[in-house]
Image (cartoon, rainbow, N blue to C red; front, side, top):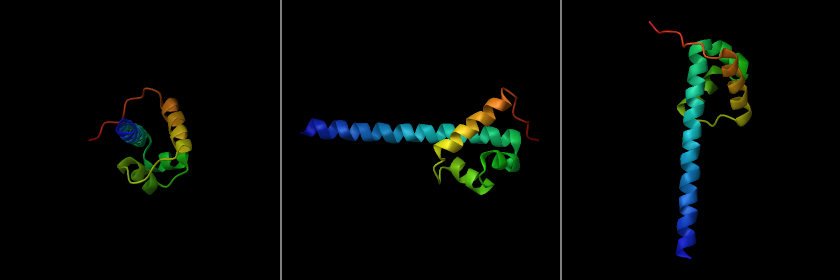
Length: 87
């Protein structure tokens, strides 16, 4: 029975770590879109207030899957445009 507990704990850790990687990917994607579009345009495209987008980036809230799919569409439209340089 100890082996089963170990496997369950290992699976829980993997799920947690995958979620962390997933959140990191979403945050990076949000930051890229934010740098190219600005907060107001990104907010309008995702139909979410800029404050909520920032909480997703900071990891204080979970970005819904449907919003992530919208973000993917936005990034696809932007293509490989370089991020604007900050002064």
